[in-house]
Image 1 (cartoon, rainbow, N blue to C red):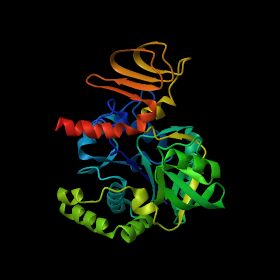
Image 2: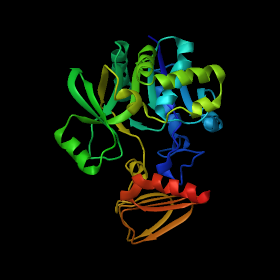
Image 3: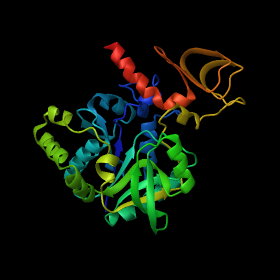
Length: 338
């Protein structure tokens, strides 16, 4: 059966502020090397999926930036971002018209993956399970009690490195994350999914019938207000937590969703004092901190366990322990700017 891919590129990367902005989110930034994250994700699939079968779904306002990075890529545009469940459902309805049934690989556009060979081998295993009708997701074996990821609880092996999914868990507090790590049977939720078009549409119609009805009406009428009324809900909460026959493949490649400045620091070099330095940075008696400047100089004295980011028009200063809370700061900024 034909393989197709859908890259989800509607996130706004708020926890990477001020480098990431509403109209220039992190998937369009070159954070781990010379290429933007979305281009790395696209190129990772080349050879495994034909280039004409790789699609990207993106809100209308981000389409021009995407075209500058990947001018020949096939694009599905949303009137606005409404989270992953509406985006995937909408794209699947559109792709069914072009392909009929096919095995669909759904991937976030902004993740970091090391060892492409292992990554593609796991996708090949997932493809075989999806052919049989399972909804497949990839789980990452946790190496630390991380509160920035959702978790997948598994219950019983169904062959090789494939497990039956028992539950999807929301991002836990630190105590719960430590408990997951201690008892085992829990994996980080990679947000990567593989399924047949007919199977995922079956689950959408079973668990989110009102959304599907409104989406089909939107496709017929093109009235943007209908899309605006769709629920803002994740695919995990809307479908995967309720669906039948869900299988998780244990991934053996190195992975990160690069959700925060702390996550990025895991993939950049540190100095002997544990500092990450990007751009013009001058330090004295500072350690275990992240300094990122793409405009001007950062000079720091006696700084420990902090994040300092400088761009042309903004500066972020926060403890590393608060990296997950930058989103809250952005909400406050937006209210004050009004």
